Image (cartoon, rainbow, N blue to C red; front, side):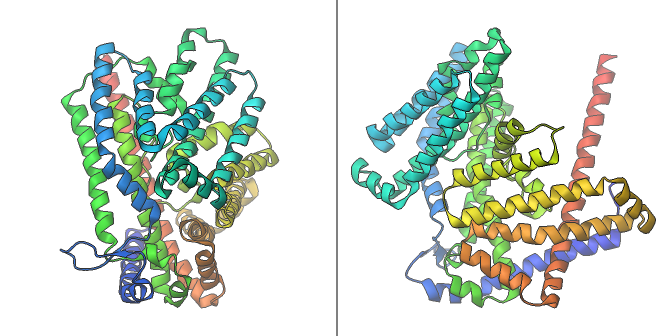
Length: 517
């Protein structure tokens, strides 16, 4: 059974959820004139003439990503055409070709110094992967991670702009490339060390220099991601090259057009909702009424989500053309009500990396609670270091760790005989569902607020904390009521999706049995 609540009740939650999100978004729109008045000379452009409103151009990250995709679309096209030609001629993937395309791009875009730095870093990690010790490999990776954070500092940033003759956007781009490279080098290195210990000599080529360079410098994911762990890339090395069928091309065009659609949608939405400009102006944020404040938080998350759907979607589309199985696209934040699911489904590639190479390296399924807690803590330490030495990143990482720890402990408690006996004595199935929803909402509220430290700033995050928890019990009760509607609607959708997948799997099994007979 998927349906645990009466149809009328779950319909009410859906309706209230829609009303809350729609009206709070409208309130953000209504503050547009005030936001523009406060910051009209900075962070706005004229916008599209057909709309006739100024456009919020404050998001430097999106501005850089959008320009990168538009200015370098030629390189993506060249990669696809030449990649398919080489693959069909050789009848196998060509990692050397993948690396060659990125080598030419990095050299023409960032110059000889950055080209040498990028490939020297890759060769350094390849050398470390040839060792038999994970300790040595992780020591080298840690030093590289610390060096990368030093390069992000203002002093080194200025040094790089002076001595490389690159602009700020180019320095920003190459640092992102180095950050993605680190994850891919770690993925390859750990897999390579484990491969040599397993003594599977028949697949030694898969851990040689050529596939390593092709993986690390795979152009479609070089700058905008997503991270694909090496086992995903490795599968493409083993299989025969598939023909460029009409269906394959149509799927590719569908994915690209979908990313273009969301790009146009996001650009259009920035004419009406000035959330990027708003997140830099704490004075205006503090003046927002509660409807507008929480609408601002919702839109901030949605805009962030759409950016990654676009960026990751491009890389995934090209990966599929090259017979590489990419991770799933980011899941809409409105459909996520458990914070553990946020990490699993928003950036699935990063989740796979963290779970496989950090968490599982430090503990096993049968490990003690203390060891699992330590593994989780060190995972978030890595997240903090990889994103950068910033105080708002530290607060975000810490709150994420605490919320996930509480969720994990609550899940363990719910499985104990004492708790199960309490539930059976006091609740039926429907009321247990409501009880769990109320407990989940208590955790979801601070979990959501933790994201505003990351998406906006420390000061904006503090405003959300103060408004939510220090505005009186009645105010918190209203927030709780709104969030519990989100919780139940998300849970309902999740259960139906799970039931659909299970039914689809059963139908596939029945079909296979019929065919085999």
